[in-house]
Image 1 (cartoon, rainbow, N blue to C red):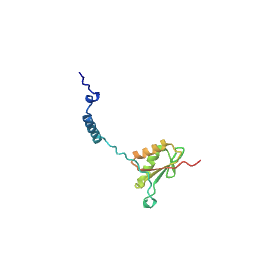
Image 2: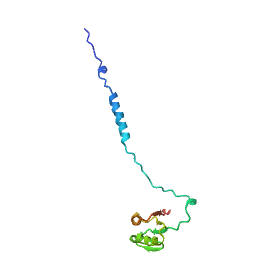
Image 3: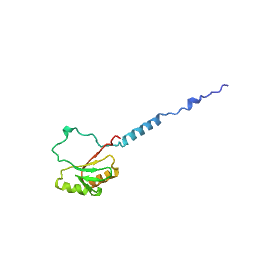
Image 4: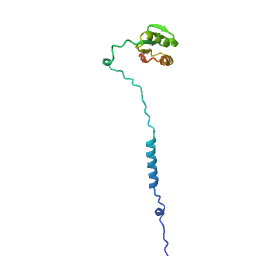
Amino acid sequence: MRRARRRAGDDAGVDMTPMLDIVFIMLIFFIVTAVFLDERGMDFTQPPESEAPSSLPPALLVSLDGNDRAVVEGSPVALSGVANRIEALRASAPDRSVMISAAAETSVAAVVRVKDDLDRANVAVTLKVEPLSAR
């Protein structure tokens, strides 16, 4: 008598359809619930010279040299006193803006300290850093 032989591939098949359904449902779930970050950067482009308003008063200039010394409107000031000096100058002309001009050799700590002091005093500041000179 002849025995009926089974093929190994006939009964060993697994239906993958339910698993694929679950994978697609999970994929859709994670796409819908994902949080997409809205990263914003600072715009460093300079406006064209023709768009610059000319009727504004000149900015109060805070210069920082390579030795971390501050000069406000031509008079030397300690780094800790820059914010007080700017507030005194803005008392007579509150619409004047403030610009921090730092030499390339100025330490980052000095620039950050002056900027933070002015931010605490609610003074809007523009930063200008001189490029390194070719040596």
